[in-house]
Length: 451
Image 1 (tube, one colour):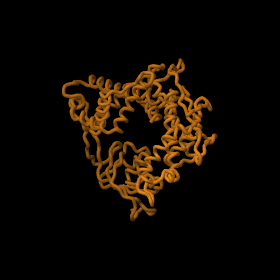
Image 2: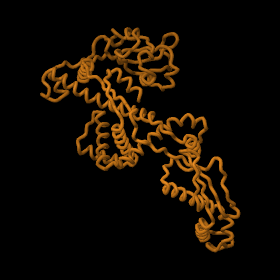
Image 3: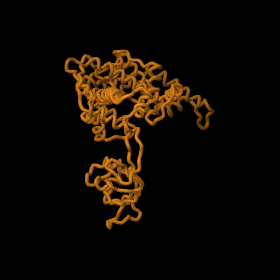
Image 4: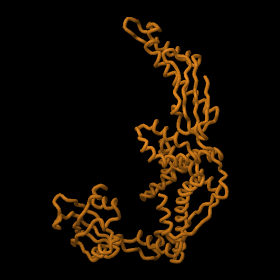
């Protein structure tokens, strides 16, 4: 057996695998003998079929199967022995033809192409400068948070007439061209939040209504996008696109959220009885909570943007032509060249990140322990249940987290989260990061850009 390696370019190589009879004869003969023991042909007892007939009937297919196994084993050994960091798998050469006589087996030569991952230098240099945006905790932000707390602990009232910040509960009915309810038209019970209606004329129309009031409105003007309108009317996204005309809205109830007064009762509900005793202290606690919350948001946005920007800075090269061929040859569903070209950029970006992660993991000898897996599983489970107002005690949380980790897919997903976190933590130490204060509104735009 011989394997000749030839560089097509820096990240693309060709391997010529030559197999000689002494490499495969014994293997083929052993399989033929096993086949003979199991074979049954008319006129012969089981296991007594002449080898000549076995060879004639099964020889070529067994030879092909054993050669494939040998090739796979030899390629794998060559990659390991030469420490080749391969992308994808070896694929048949596009330009070289295989050689060998299947009728009179002798030497066989097979040609393969391999793509290689680039070697990355983690010494990024002085150009590796990044900005971490920090949200200002100013009086406006504190005031907005206090108002939100007041609303969360407020009470729903039922006023006689609607105001600019009220919610209307009612019934939508589609109208025909004559302004009458359309027979078989769309109908739905839903709500309208007057405060969030952006069209001023429509918002004015919704103020001063009382239970029993009936108005005609354009549903597009009381919703926030197609998804919201679809939920409001109980129709599909496609139906929303084609929806035109007015709807009749009949008011059933008017609801008003009366914010909680800023008093000791509110302080106790938010921070526990007697923990805060005056408004000044309350605002300080709100500011501290906001700083922590904003910092977590800022870190999340930074880490997402940091990975993208760092990869742009590194300009990680890939064997693009090889990878596109490999994708077309190995994809479960057939792809056209046009489809590959369309999907390749996102695939390549993900692959670059994998290569960078692998490089860092090898340099720092990254490991994920069982304790870290359990801790992260508990954190994720706890956060998920808390989101729905279902906090867990410590023992229950541990048991649920263990059940999650028993699922191999979930265990791998959580491990991937930890690996990525450790990789980013390490990469942050290798670059220069400066902080920049921005307003809450400015940060909102930055966050929206990375989702």
